[in-house]
Image (cartoon, rainbow, N blue to C red):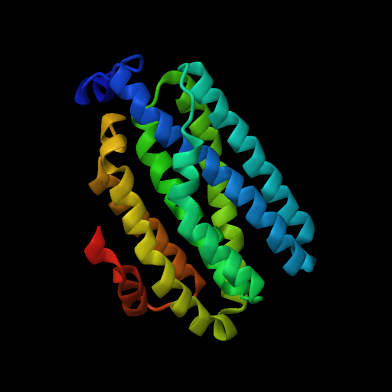
Length: 231
């Protein structure tokens, strides 16, 4: 099994691992909870897609329970206070956009940024996860691509009217991703997840999503670079 020999063995029961895991596990639990709430709100705006969005919300709730089980499996109590602070700015930006009726901004935050952030984190985590968490996470990441696809398809269909708001929302929210990545870089490293790999996976997936929506390659490069200096 060469892939196991290629990376140093992680001690899932060490105090250092469990300490870092308490924050990373809390982040994924809170992220799924935020997604559940956000999709329920979007279902109110996008009534023609209500059934699909409610289904996505239920999936996120199921993911949350799966990650709660991962923490229990390692006897780790997730630091939910840390996680709420971690997502606070994106949460506030979504709420403000919701209050102002900016559904395009809401979709960019939830269906592009949060989903892409999750996909990147899960992809990098799976190879270094404990057996129980790996099985859970592999199932979750397949669903997240479906969630990303919903946002892509809606924004693609409404691209001409959504483009200016998308650019503004990207400018306001993408820099937050780099702050968030920097905030968890040390804990992620303890879990065997390298920051450079997280950044690369996020950039690739986010850039592909922007391209799928309708931005040109040059525009994708410009939009993706916003906030990158903070990475």
